[in-house]
Length: 117
Image (cartoon, rainbow, N blue to C red; front, side, top):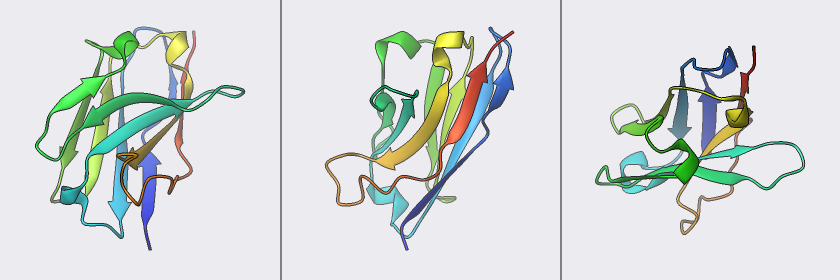
């Protein structure tokens, strides 16, 4: 059974940091590029960060220099380190394999990130 379980969200003050985790199961994790997305109510899901099989990364312009995506293939887990958070980062965060793969769309429950003073 393919499953992605996100965790690590919470309430944080502006300027704070959080580290999100996403544990994958049911796939050979090391064979997939992985992405982090976020979504706020009433808006489309937004691609935030991408990490390739080889470790290459790419980011949404608004998070460059603040967010870092990484992966641990042995644990089947992808991470998102988020620093210098702003209220505009408030969203539910999800992970998923690259949209070109057959397993894109198996959405987990996500993890809520709220940035507020």
